[in-house]
Image (cartoon, rainbow, N blue to C red; front, side, top):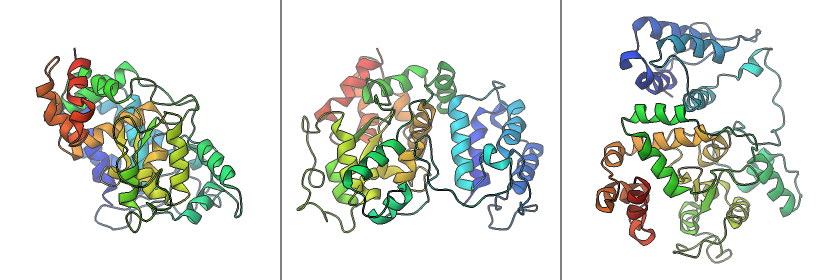
Amino acid sequence: MTHRRNLCDFIRPTLKNQKITPELVAALDLVLDRAGVARDDGSAPSAARAGQPLPPFRKELTELIRPHLATGKFSGAQVAGIDDLLDRAGVPRDSEAAAPPAPPAPPSPTGGGTSVPTKRFDAAGFRAFLGVPAGASAETFKQTLMQRLSNTNAPALSEEDYKQAAANLGVPVKHIKAVRTVEVREDPFDDQGRPTILFERHIFAKHCVPAGRFNASNPAISGGPYGKGNYGSKASQYEKLAAACALDPEAAFRACSWGAFQVLGQNAVDLGYGSAVAMGFALTKSEAAHLDCFLRFLKVNKLVDELQACRAGDPASCVPFVKKYNGSGYATFSYHKKLAAALA
């Protein structure tokens, strides 16, 4: 994995003159070496940790970067993005770094970005990951999953977060806010602290192994597209996710559009998450994590220019963006009209 390059690519747009000096590169390498992060060429770090008390790497890293930021301070989106990169690089949280490594603990019963292995779970493996005992009821499984995805203290986006994201993309703040308005008119977290989702039956069927495996036995959650007006209530989306997770967890998480910007889980690996399950759990952290996911999607799919070209009151100008962002059926749900109206 190119963890070091990914970190540099992530912070570069927010640095003064958008440049990383050789001195900063050397300092970053030194911190990441001591954190035990492998070099991008696969070679071992020059001073990997070896069972000794660990310093608070994340604090040290952010304090190293902060003086080089154009604004002089981090936004919530930047912090969430750096945390996600360091999670995937295996750098411990500072609360974990204060003491020598301890034996693995059982999974936490709450959400908020719990670390998720980068592998495809089968149903039994996912139950074990959640800490659900063998032979436990379907209701116990569902309630445990709901608890793990809940974060009632998830921080909201700030105006500074929006400004940083807009500067990162080179688009007006109102364009980012307009997409959020169209995708989730209400709160990006529901009343139980779970990221707002929409479950897509045809996406679940597509990603099961083999595809369509559960179409006959579970037609309510596996089959063709629901179509306009047939998705069910907001509350029912997590019921569908839980039922699908009992069959094929990875396909279930891929089948959901997640959070404030409704990014579909099937994009997870392309966006740099270890899996769709990992993406779903990452989005329990904060609204800033939702914004980071959105930025990743725009960059990976080269949609920044299309978003920038959208104009208030001009649905036609929004078609190139929504056609890629919402899919070929965008007109059925009037996404181009909604976005043009939201920009007004």
